[in-house]
Length: 415
Length: 225
Image 1 (cartoon, one colour):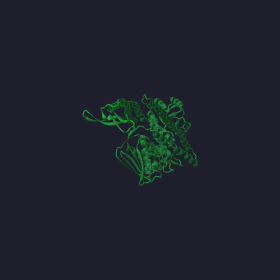
Image 2 (cartoon, rainbow over the protein chains, first blue to last red; image 1 turned 90 degrees about the vertical axis):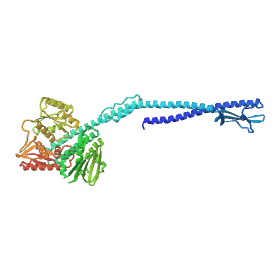
Image 3 (cartoon, chains in turn blue, purple; image 1 turned 180 degrees about the horizontal axis):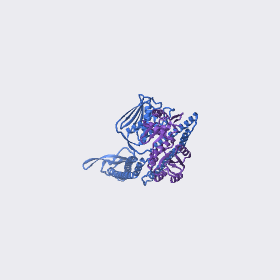
Image 4 (cartoon, each protein chain N blue to C red; image 1 turned 60 degrees about the vertical axis):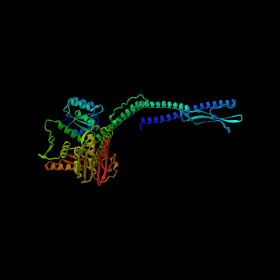
């Protein structure tokens, strides 16, 4: 839920509650005040009548009989609201009256005195006041609501714009972000922190890149020395078998190390998304090119290659990375193949799939694409080939999948 | 043939120099930008092997200098930075080839030789080793005065051997030269034997001598000694 919607909802909810409560409070307060005043007035009349009864005996004839009547019971005086029928303009109306009933004893006779006063005009008065106050409150709420909406929208506008800027932020661009200024302190503070944070990310990323590059540089030069020195050593005359063995061991170790160094550097480059250039590439051409490169290996294992494809499948990709993917997939299909096996390559505009005959995996299908996962520790490979393929796929949001059905390994990439 | 090797790492400079000197190249060494610049102003070189990461300057500036003053000098860039940017920048500035550290000395020698062949317009370009003669333009071979039919791989294998004659060449180096260094097939070198056997057989059928020696455990040597 957007903050905007949330505050609006809360505002409306509380406004309704305040409106109801305030209207009710005004109504009941006014009512109790007017009732009190009326009771005082009734009491005053009662006193007046009491006085009259005392001094003007015998009783004057009252206009209405039931104003004063003799009663055998003496009670304490009480107030009550009562409905009373009255005929106004020939129409019978039920009107609400306030009634005071009191008892006076005069000359050994108890009189019940009832005084009534119409509540109608009070009621009207209260209603009008409550209504007008209610209308004022309602207008106030509506005005505040709209003013608030406008203010919120204006205040949050730079925030949303900045959010868009942040969403499009990427470390590879290596550009500092330029956020919209606002006159709201909190947002301004947030902007400052974000600018600081992204600047830090950018500089850290650059440092990391520099470090990887420097480290690889520093490593490759000694490796180059070791490699050339071991090659020079090989050229020496009169080496015996044991010495040759030792030189070979050194030479092979250097080869492995430099290959590992190159591959790890490549992986980190793909991760850092440093291969940004894209070209439209014919998938088939790349596959044919790499099948030619691997021709000797395929023939050596007497592998049959079947290639089925929808012609002219083109994809937008970095040519270097795609070369790497196809090369790794083909070499993988050859390496884990059997003598007289087969490789089936299928390309459509939705996916490419490489199937090859081979024995079942010793490791799980899901860990196949992890770094340094390999089938046998004896093999000379690093288990980085498929990790590179996976990284490239991640880079382009392609899905990669491995399955093993009926002695056939299948690796498919869905574009 | 005069070569200048610009390389700040002295040990690497030494081995490169001594390997190439055996090929009858006159090798001069420059371990710093300053010395290299000095030498380039004073002398003329056929080939410059240029490390672009120098302690006191950028090798790419030297490359610009060479191309402005001696455009006929061939430049082979050596870099530890395996980055595409540097490669493209170097080739854009007129470098003729690019090799990444660490490299095989035999590979460097092959690259230098092919660079010389491309640069040398006058005279006989053919590579002659006793009764074997290679025409690098036509990619054809004559052995014992008879044309030798070779496959592409066999041809490059022979060229590599003759360029690096009398040297021990490793299987890894051969594989990298023929199939590129991205090929991840190090655990199986059977495919080299196949080409090697075929090449040997073809040379023998033409009546040429068998110069190919197997060096125990390491690789091969093409030698008449």
